[in-house]
Image (cartoon, rainbow, N blue to C red; front, side, top):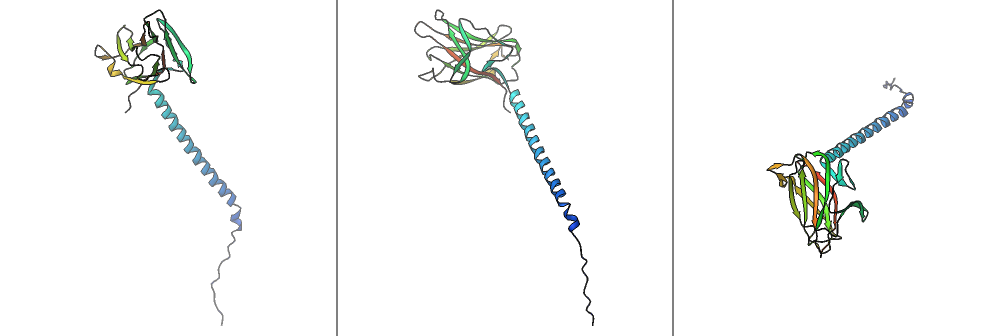
Length: 209
């Protein structure tokens, strides 16, 4: 008696083996394209963030004085290349024969600072017994004076203090300054105390939302 068994067709897969390297290459190419696209998107986000951060501040001095600004200091000598502990800053030394002077940073054109929220800078002085005034003035000759305590440290020659003055506190005739002409750091001195001033990182910051 004959036994009927199903016949299993014989398939040959050898003809497909030659396509394996091609498929592997395609997978590799797709993976590389995906990685490249991810890196590109990441760089675009970083670039966008950098632009937003740059737009959020207006720098007046950071190692160098921003083009469009000039040194209008009076009553002393200013040095815009003074280096302390590897950092470049502004050093201002009133004349020994004067009762004071001012480091005056003047803009060649009117600067609209309404969109900003604060004036920030770093400052130290060689004497904490003498007053330091920050004077912000506009193109019409109006000004606002803010008196600072240069430092409360006993050794101000080695200590810096960071300041942030809200522009809402710098109002002229109850209006925000719209045509800024300059920033002045005025120092006083007497026969007993000789004052020297150091200023760095002067900038206007935009409000954070």
